[in-house]
Image (cartoon, rainbow over all chains, first blue to last red):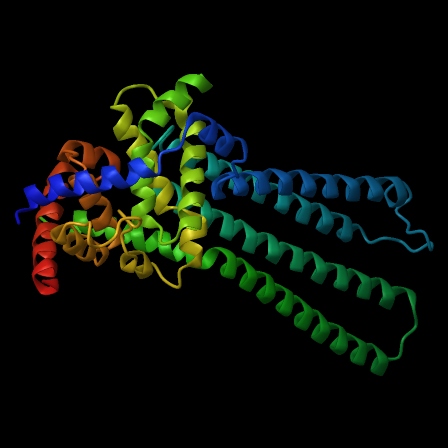
Length: 223
Length: 162
């Protein structure tokens, strides 16, 4: 049988089959009413929520700093807060904000590549681009959070040395245990969260990249 | 606008069913994908500018959604599973009712890769190279080259199955 004849038969069979699955207007309307968000819509929602939550946290931290510590430059137990700590805090907050701004800019740029309903090639480029960006910002954010905990540890340690008379031996043991714990907790947290992210999105992203490569193979492999 | 949308999508819903039948194995997945495609169509409908045929636009949305479906790909151990899925064109029909050649074609198509499946589906649904190129984003020339390759592959597969 020629492909031309098969084509006719295929259309007949597939039309018959889809005819049996026909839904009426009410059923379609009901389906639309219970629609769930697509992955990209969910990512956009997560970004918006994450952005607002982080801005609120940063604003709250700055407000607490200014209301309780900054006016006198002293902590509640009367210790002087080193000036570099303020700058460090400020620098890290600015780093988080600039990370989000960079992300939003790149996100906007990817979305501008094609508006409305794109062809498959552009849809894949867009989805892969957004997910890769999402993965990157997630890793960066994670690294910054760990950096904050590391600087917090250093700041706490510095204050402790300044305010208490500790013997040399005690200082060294404490320092070693502290660093070890910090590395352990930070490392575990980093790999755990990264593992979760890869488990959720890793296979999906791989699948999309394979599809994209296959589509490009058509362009590059033939002439 | 809702009424207009329901009318036009209702009249062309066969397209969504055909895409779902190709990309999903069981009924639950088919229903999920149908709903996902419907939601995407509704979301994108205001941007439909009638520059292309409604059916071409609908195929574009449906195939984009099916290929990038998070639920579907995430469940797969690797992308190749997409290629190994069986076509479910007429799963309610008994094999006796099905034309033998169509059964062979169905088996052969199920062995094609994801993109090849997409191209052959559009070809079998009487879409011309221009429309296939518009939906996939590859040039007409490459659609033609790819189509020739798929035809040869199908012929081989169907001979082997026979």
